[in-house]
Amino acid sequence: MAIALIQGASRGIGLEYARILSSRGVQVIGTCRDPTRADNLKSLPNTQVFKCDVTKEDDIVNLSQIVEKHFNKLDLVVNSSAILHPSGRGETRLKDVDFNGLMSTLATNSAGPLVVAKHLSPLLQKGNGLIGSDKFKGNNKKCHAGILVNMTAKVGSISDNGLGGWYSYRMSKAALNMATKNLSIELGRGKNRIICLALHPGTTDTDLSRPYHKNVPADKLFSANFAVSKLLEIIDGATIDDTGRYIAWDGTDIPF
Image (tube, rainbow, N blue to C red; front, side, top):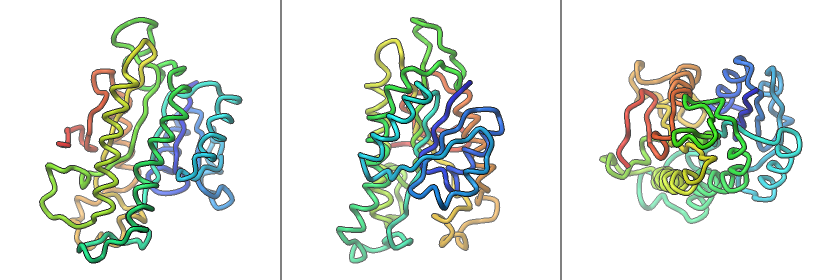
């Protein structure tokens, strides 16, 4: 059985990953800061829920120990939790920036996923290639073990930034993209290689983006189900040759 861990699975895109994967018969490990408030997640079949605050390394270490003890491997990890800014709105001007807001956003969106990779990559290296199109074949140079997905955003592209603003969020996603690229190099070595992807879901109807929906054309605002279904098509078709890519929901590459 394939085993997938969704970090930040209690709502939005993370919950939809858990919903779709569990319906496929994948064993889902869903994490969130407060499992007592995650009834929708706990109601899913083939799903176990554990506490993990991505900004606390002790939580991540504890999670890795639980997963190792009870599952011994992972085939997919999705880092999904993110904040736009602690205030709920992005900074449109430099004078809106404050140190605490910036650090909080970077901790959740950039540092947290990297520390998750640190502690869960050994379990991904034990994966059987059950997710992705290149199945595990020992020393086959094209094979992979597990897949690591970092949920990013197009506004994290430095090359594509023509509007400015959203300092904390843009910086945090650009940093996450760099972390993903670094991980793809280090974890792409050896025989138990991990595919590392930075995926952009498009503008999705979630709590994070809801304050800005009035500026989004109706045909450009996606449901969580549509966005995650498209992203899973990318994940299902991924090969080791895709590792390190920064990919939009429609399969196109986004410039770093």
